[in-house]
Length: 576
Image 1 (cartoon, rainbow, N blue to C red):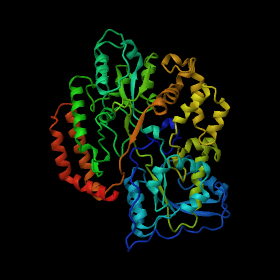
Image 2: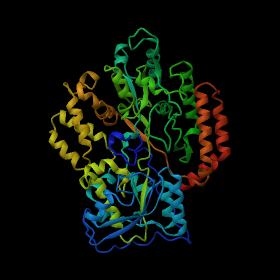
Image 3: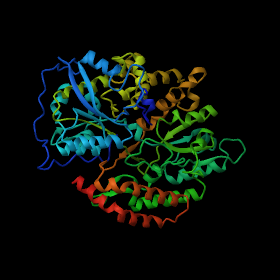
Image 4: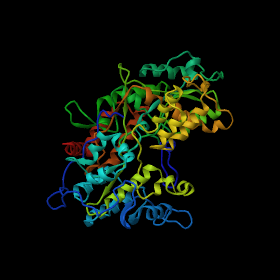
């Protein structure tokens, strides 16, 4: 889910044990570049407390992916607002913007590249992609912040990093030295679940599917056996991608719904990401025979009418909202969207989340996402790197604890000078875990509140809404087990997302399969857009029957000839 820079960010708006962790950062600057081998910069005498005030006014410069023309409340601006005033007054930290640009990407990337080319970057840069971060490290401009991090990062800040430590170490450390601060996106966002109308299953005396064949049978029954009982043949099976949607998640697009990843995974196919072949070398998942098999299955399903017609050309999500569909793939938070609309139109709509096992072992091989989408780098020339770490500590401690809550609500988290998504790896799922502890009598509500206040007070909102709506017996999570009367109806999205949607993450059997790298190679920068267009067009036409399955082989050859082979070599080289 998108996070507007001027709106309050909560888990509700967000939109793992990794099988394959991302490749570690590699390579050092050449002889003509500054070296990263120097010892960490020494800092002036400052308050060593993670949230301590600087002993004197400390001015630090930054580059930030924020639109300089963004409107702020009257009397405030990018340079001067409630956050910058608070930092100066309470912490003796003054932030100067050396450059900013729209967070759309291109403008900011160009300004970062210009700074690197000039031989000097600001005291710190936020919102960097993995490729930008790697470029700065290779150029020798990133500070080894190992000692600064150990000394100044607060326990809460370190807890976030340590919740996915192996992954983050592989991304930002070289030879034990730490050169960047990764963002930390909650892992439940990357677990796609199969949402099913349980009331339709029950009416037709069917069970949740454990393989693709059973999924097909359910889709067929939902089409032919009048699951909604209205006497009309007006329902569909599996909802396909909406207009301009995606067939599956890939390296850059995750945490969305109406795709086919569970079906691809059933064939051990992972299109859109880089995986290892039988020899342990990098290969693009979209070019493998397993992907061809999965495409053939999807083409068969579409031809048989088991997938909703009009996929990729119509607003297929309306089928869910209008209660004409009983199957779709989506994230845990979908009840804030399509499922919420479905329930408003039919209060008996009982949407339940399941995992579709990828094999006979019952484990779902879920395609993982980028748990560290952005990075912060501190310049090796920065005189006060601890100030950057302190700002992250402040952000993690909760901005509403430092500025007027009205200002915080209007500005949103994105306007804070050291903003990046920064949450514990299990993130939202902890709400459901604590709900279970409460209903099982292991913790009181006050104890849960105290627990959440120690790391993320926003979680208390979801917890309180769930326990206010749940009726006995507490283990009944069907629609009959909740009270949404009166004003409680307004909390459906919160309750159903956190109280039901997270069940597969907390209780399910799955393993994440992640891409080998998120690095953009030189050839990718020139060719990837065209290659992606080719891939999307070919696969889409195969599924809807506009091209035969043999088009896959033509695609693979063309993909390799038009840059794919060179990109694969570059990816493998980066992993060596």
